Image (cartoon, rainbow, N blue to C red; front, side, top):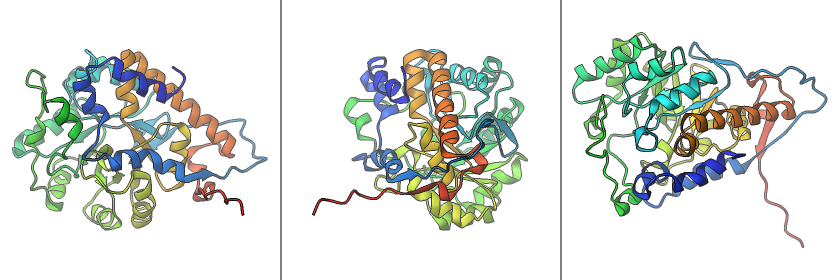
Length: 345
C-alpha cells in the first residue's frame, strides 16, 4: 500500500458490497461525488525556488487545538460496520499521529470508550440537533467531559439524500442490529434554523464550527451568528447532487468571511498536494473521510495510521518543493487554474 488510492481500491474486497456502498457512494447520479475529486485537477501549483527549506514544520493550531498538520479525519458514521473496533481504532491511530479526528453523532462507540482507547488525542464532536433538545444537550456535555475541544454542527442534512447505491443493494440505514449510543439519523430535525445555532452557541462554551456551507451568503450568516469556523462541505456528495465541489466553493466562502473565522474544506482529497491546494485557496485545514474508511476496512487502526503517515509525508514534501516551510506560508500565489493545452494548428 503506497498511496491512499491503494486503500480505497482494496476496501471493497474486505467489506460486503451491500455495506461498503454506504461508505463509497453518493446521492443520485453521483455528479457531485465525482466533482469533489475532479476539482483538484483544475488547479496547478506554482513553486518558488531558492528558498531555504531545511526546516519544515506541519504543526498548526485549529480553534485552540494543537495538531500535527493542517489535515484531519472528517466525521463518518457507523464505523463498526467495517471494523470491529470501529471509532476506537480510528481514534487510536489519530491520537498516535496527533491528528484531529471529528467523531460523528452516529458513532458506534461511546465517547468514553473512544477516549479510553486513545487518551489525550485531539477530537471534535460532529453534532446533529435532535428533536429532543435534552438528548442533544446531554450528548454535547458528554463529549465535552470526554475531552472534545470543539463542536461541529452539521447543517446540510434536513433530510437524507437519495443514495441509490444503498437502495439498489439493500443497505438499511441504520442496520437494525447496530448499536448507536447517541442518535439515529432520522431523529435529526428538518426544522433547524439559524436560531438553533444560537441555541447551541448558548449551551456550550466550546468553539463552534458550522459544517455544510457552500455559499458566501451562508458563510456570512454563520459568522454573524457566532461561528468560530465554517466548514465548506457538500457531505461527500451524499446529499444534494449537482452542487459545487468543496474546493470550487472554498474561494467564495473564504473571501466572504474575510479572516473573521477559520475556514475548513473536505471532499475529494486523495493526495498531500490536494491539501496544499486547499490551503492556497483559503482553507486553514482540510479533512477527508473516504480514505480513512478504506484504510479502516483494509487494516483497522494500522491502516488509518498508515494513511495518516502517507499524507503527512506528501504534505511535508509538497511544502518543501513548493518553497514553503510551514502551512501558514502557503498563499493564493502558489496556485493557478490549470489551462488546457493548445491544440495543434
